[in-house]
Image (cartoon, rainbow, N blue to C red; front, side, top):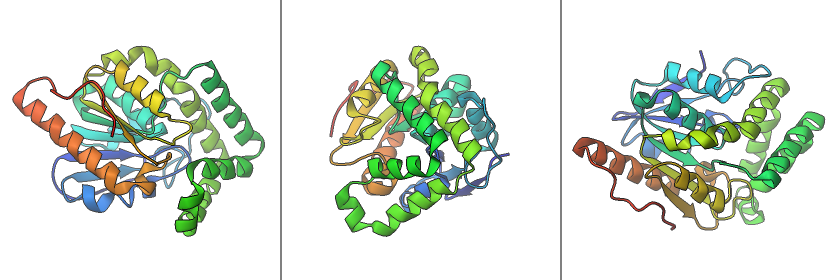
Length: 267
């Protein structure tokens, strides 16, 4: 069983982190989210204190792990790899997912985008430390680094602490799972919000709008001036987006009516 922790009271909310990170990436969001929800944060297989991930692990495997520790029906928030896992969970067991918030998710990569992520996977296999440093370089702007140098060092330390086999196995999921999910996204029935930063070079605004357009009734939100690590860089704005979406989804469910939100919007 994967490691997890549950705090707070209210409707159940599950938080799923990205590849190479762990549940601590949600620490800045927990004070606000636990004011309104019973929140479960997980360490995906191969991350944190959870069991190793072996080569060949799939998004479906990771989603089944989350389902094992989550409440019967939860609002699910996934970041990056976690967003792909959340999509898989919503497809495999729709009754478990009351709403989806997909943060910094990839979707339907084009040939150039797919080639770029394959190159990063190959780079991590050849030079893990160098790949970790390159990831942090992509995630942190110079301004953010100057403001929080210790946080940048902590994120790098988390990446470097990963078991190499587990990291590469899960990065392979991140690199390929969107290809299999893309043709099935129209089957997702949970109310869905897709969120990214305007300056995210990997989970781009165009990709986020593409994701929202593929899921029936989904909305998109672009946070100006932010990169990839929204739970750390912009926790207040992200929490506001999550809570607003969850309240809207809960109201729609209670009244048994379709959402009146527009198909997509930008902030």
